[in-house]
Amino acid sequence: QKEVEQNSGPLSVPEGAIASLNCTYSDRGSQSFFWYRQYSGKSPELIMSIYSNGDKEDGRFTAQLNKASQYVSLLIRDSQPSDSATYLCAVIVLGAGGFKTIFGAGTRLFVKA
Amino acid sequence: DVKVTQSSRYLVKRTGEKVFLECVQDMDHENMFWYRQDPGLGLRLIYFSYDVKMKEKGDIPEGYSVSREKKERFSLILESASTNQTSMYLCASSLSRDRGQFFGPGTRLTVL
Image (cartoon, rainbow over all chains, first blue to last red; front, top):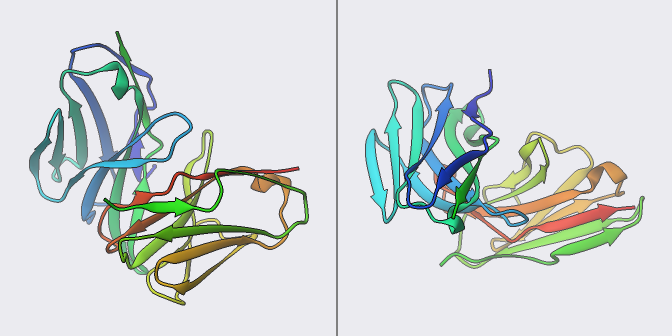
């Protein structure tokens, strides 16, 4: 079982709709959770961080964390074609060697104009 | 804003050459990381450093070494480049190891 799992997509949504991206993780001791956006040919960009259960909103983005169910999601409201990118979920776990970041393989999002 | 810069966007080298990739961050971050990213394989950690002159192996350190002589600079060295090291190399930094990372623009290395 992969430590951080994401549906590879592509997830296709019409412009103006809500895009919902999901991520599950296997380590119950995971500490911190992040979403990165990566445009084709570019490097990942940190867009959301969430550390406790519940929702965190930043503009059109909402991150949701449910530690009991071991999932974290990203909602993008009023999706725009410029949101078309790969979204990487990342989880920080505490192991014998200290904190370690584990990245998911990413979900490709396509927003149709 | 955090700024992470990498010495080259594109690099072409020959098999057997020694290759230096440099990364500089301007936010006084303790931690710096080197990844490579390949289609279908995602981000893979090569090395990281949590302090000056300190380094730790990541998941795929073979064929690579690193140097961190100053806090803001983290270098990745390919001692003898091989074709299977053709990849996108990404540097990142973070304030602490339990926080998010800020990535540089990446270096696309081609080894012929």
